[in-house]
Each structure stands twice: as structure tokens, then as C-alpha cells.
Image (cartoon, rainbow, N blue to C red):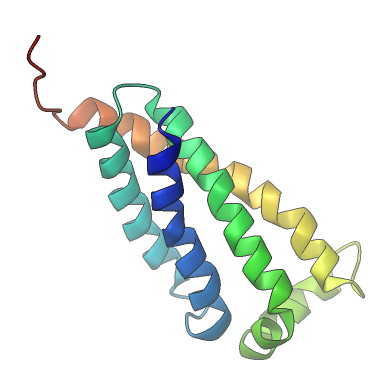
Length: 135
């Protein structure tokens, strides 16, 4: 596993965690993630010699740590800029504890998006040609 690459690519997750708190609304966030997933899948395929799916999956788990931390630590600002979060949270099992729900749901979304990013990375690994290594 190329943990150095995973950490570097996870900085997209840190940037998105902060950007979604302050600037990026829900309705366009998926488009940002699509671009990020394509860039990350390509980088994984280009810089790793195998285990593409696992690299993508673990990258998403690290991303979820960054994003969950940003949303929990900056929750008041996040909720102010995204009032729909409180509306959605009102229908959740812990409606009076939105930070706890964020802590619970963050890893769930990390795993789900990890499956998607892992698939992107797997497909990119099949499509992207790596430079030949001389022996």
C-alpha cells in the first residue's frame, strides 16, 4: 500500500471538508467529488503497481476522517450555511445530537464512497498505462 500517496490525495478530503462548511452547497458538492474521484483514481492507477481498489477504498476512509472532523468541529457554521442539515437531522435517531449523528454517519459514508472510489481506481488501473520499468 502506498500510504504516502493516500495521505497526499486525502488532502482533497481536507479541502472539501472545509469548503463544504463555508462555500460549497449540497446541490453542487457531488460534481466536485466526481472530479476529485477521477483525479484520485488516475493518480492511484499511475503511481501504484496494484491493489487499486484497496488504495481507493482506504483513501476514502482517510477522507471521511478529514470531512467528519471538519463538520463536527465547525458544526455551527456548517449548520448555518446548510440549514437542510438540521432538517435532515430532525428525522434521524438522535435529532437533538447532530454532532453525534455526524460522527456516526461519517464513517458509514466513508465506507460507501470508498466502494465507489475503489471501483473508480480499479477501472483506472485497467485503463491507464504505466510506464515500463527496465530490469
